[in-house]
Amino acid sequence: MEPTRSAARLFPEREVRQMKISKRFAAAIFCIILVIIAILALASGQKPFKHLEASDIAAAEVRLTPPDKTVRITDMKELAGYLNEAVVYHKDNSYTEYCGQGVVFTLTMADGSQREIMAYNPFLVIDGVGYRTKYAPCNALNSYANGLLDAEDAAILMREPPRLDVVVDETCTGTQLNGYSWDYLDSDGYGKSGIADNPHPMDIIDRLPLIETAAQTAELRFAEEPDNIRAVHCWSDENLSDYDVNGEKVPIDGHEIALKPGGYVYRVFAEWEKSENGGGFAYYSFYVKVLR
Image 1 (cartoon, rainbow, N blue to C red):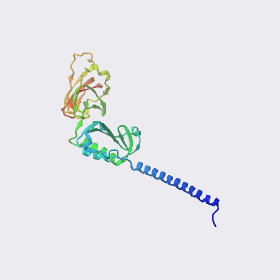
Image 2: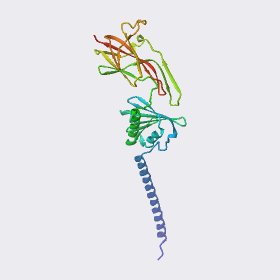
Image 3: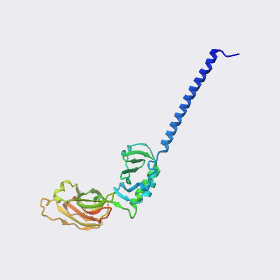
Image 4: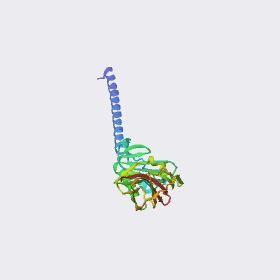
């Protein structure tokens, strides 16, 4: 028995519908596969410096905060190896809300450009953009930076005179950097210099925090030890209007100085041997009033 015309028309329509359904199903499956691939890619992360080679880096340094010190890096192969393993996930700039030690690598590339990478677990900040990062490689970068700092032959970069704090009664107070003469080499190997005049204590006493104490000594604590503390002098706050009054020499034992009764502005003169990493001399001032 031959099929009727209506039945003949029905079967092609069914086939068309089935083909459409199959295509939609295939498209849905394809989309699901793409989503799964994207999720897996996000979960596994990316290595932004996977192809970085030592020859790509002309110069490099790392700054650790704290303790606010910068170290020159000489082994580019080792540095590239650590960066090769760094893994980032999605962007996340909430690193500004976290506290802890950050290590910032500054790379001067062979083409003259600069890159800045901060390892700040659980973040890796690349040229100012924060990313969530894989813990282990980021922690390895942090440990690597601290190892460079702790090495006996660490090349500490000093582009300006190091900070000096004064400790009185177990309280640490920052001093004011005054006159200095300083030289160093920048990352491109060019010499840089800086000079500042050393003002009279009368001109700066209003800018110095007053330290009131009954202690008789104070400790000088430099961020980077000087090769020589050349001298410490003091001026009484009762004579600061007289520019002709010379400062009195203050006894110093190692890093400990004797404090005089009454109010005095103290000035420290320290010197660092000049090298490619920085050096020169600097004056620092602070104001102490020893209660009688």
